Image (cartoon, rainbow, N blue to C red):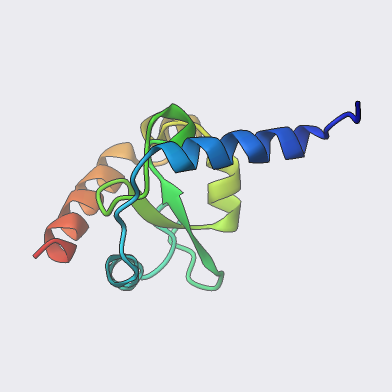
Length: 112
């Protein structure tokens, strides 16, 4: 029996988790989030490609919805990994309150 790499095992698990939940983030909503945040939601970087980051990770029950996804640069997304956003913000000594207020403001604009 062939041994599977750790990455392949995690990829299979992620695929199964993703298939179990309904993701309802539309491309239009994603584009609006990217435009409104105008950079990485965490560090503010504007010179890098942005990725969809779930504030509550999929591995912890999150899903791709307009209320759970923010644009993040690859560095922040990789650093956050599967940590819940407030825990990660505290660990990185980033302003948790400012992020949460900004996220609420942006949701108000995007959901109109």
